[in-house]
Image (cartoon, rainbow, N blue to C red; front, side, top):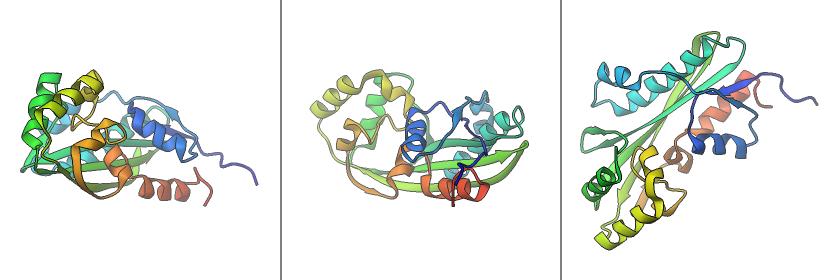
Length: 200
């Protein structure tokens, strides 16, 4: 049986998303979408952080699909909602320290959105949410954590990587592990099978 001939492009620079797809045996290339995320956020209801994750994923998928209509393009993005507000990536380690201190002992939601485009049209999109309860960690742990993880935390919306030392920040996580990492993997794999990118 020959391998599927459909091409897939991942429109994301996220190392975690690349790793998830590669580990799942998905063949793909990467083309980072050049989109103005701030412009998308500016016209979106900040209270709808789950919807924003999907909208950003759709915009990224479309941006790449318009230049390569024959390929399937997967866009993805993740947003974090905390106490009714939208949290963006920290600009510095000092910001990350303040944010993590504020989230200590409290719960927040991570929304991972994905969208699949072909020929400049969205053919599927979806979002999944995980609820994360941060433990009441000590200042000494926070300092050690920031020193160990360093600038890499500035690429993560919550200033943590669950696949790294960030796992020690939490006491309870409700939801799918892949969603926390930044991709609703099971629905995405189902759509890739439907599209003929993967064997069914």
